[in-house]
Image 1 (cartoon, helix red, strand yellow):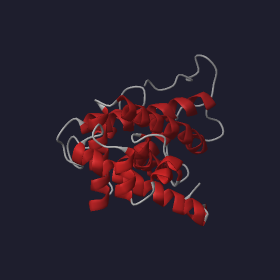
Image 2 (cartoon, rainbow, N blue to C red):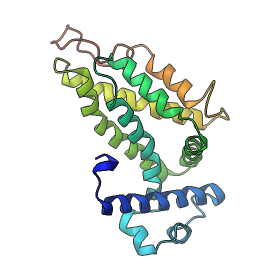
Image 3 (cartoon, rainbow, N blue to C red):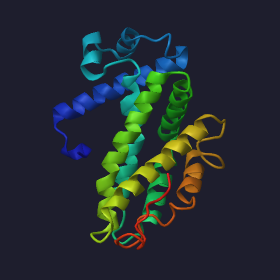
Image 4 (cartoon, helix red, strand yellow):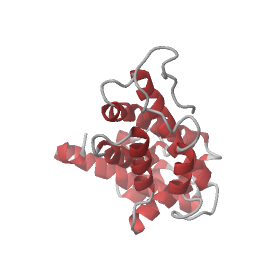
Amino acid sequence: MTTQHRTLTERRKAATQLDIARAAVDLFTEQGPDATTAEDIARRAGVALRTFYRYFRSKQDAVGPLLAAGGDHWRELLAATEPGTPLPQALEAAAVASLSEPGAEAREGLERTRTLLRAAVHDAALRAVWYRVNQESEEKLVPVVAALAGRDADPLEHRLVAAAATDAIRISLEVWSQTDAGTSGAGSPADLVIRCLRSPGLGDAGSRPRGGAGEGTAGPSR
């Protein structure tokens, strides 16, 4: 559901969730997940503890909306691709655009993600949130890929392409987060995602005609 189609109540709910998520990231950055409580996050976000638990099951779960925001933006860019654009080109262009947005806010968003992914290395609950967010993003990506691939594309490939493309972005962010590379240029998420998406087996994904065994139905490697 796009922002313009949300009701006022849904927009308020989303805004509150983002406020809580930002408060959680700030506290995780300042003092680490272990030293942060749900009460701390609620207090920083300016909401009651019961409000926190209305939206989130745990302190780690609270960062989900921020981790999901990048995937949401990428799918919006991909869905807006000009009809007729080859799918591999569309995937790369949307991924690079979403990971290289100009401005301080975009850079801060990537740095928040880096902070969370570094913390997730030692926090199993935080890793679980990251993996869940990526799984949900992959599932939402399938119909977008299907629409771009056209009616004659193999539905199996829709799933394979969505999985491979989601993993390309996930791996790029994970690898980048463990380095000191900047948010742009060599070693940045946008630079790494190009390498991932152009890896053998993925470059031709989604561009093959529908067919049976032996007729080019194999999907991209993950």
